[in-house]
Image: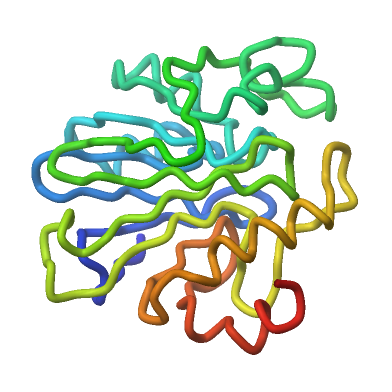
Length: 218
């Protein structure tokens, strides 16, 4: 388990699965979300140690981001949040398993749309639709005034849209480089100090990616 020190809320994360997914547990002391439960539900529950989960957020439908969603929903009773565009690939058995992985279909309790606010505890996460990696990719942004530590940095849950020095692949089914460029332009306006929580690999900031990513793609 790793911890993030400079963000406006408490963030810890596990690295799970064959392609090393980051699974985030984020809390402001009033509410808690789990982001992209990749696999090994029991490991996520162990780290939660009885902590109540208020929402399970799925940034997109790929199997390595949703593999433990069904079991975690069953174990915690927490609602699952995803986009309407990606929901069929998570909810429908044959679509959830179309990549031949043993992924359980999982009901989506809330279909979040661009510009909406996801409120958990005192946190108010702004939903940013970021198609490109998948048609229904989502990012979520939290301004410091809605966190536990308003003097610290804002947070972006980036899924597989933005990575350290890179972006999500667009050559999978449903991917689009044109959409990805438009999505990156949305993220490029966020404050430089924003802590970026990617779906894989090491954490970064919006400012650090201005030359490495945004100048190239956005």
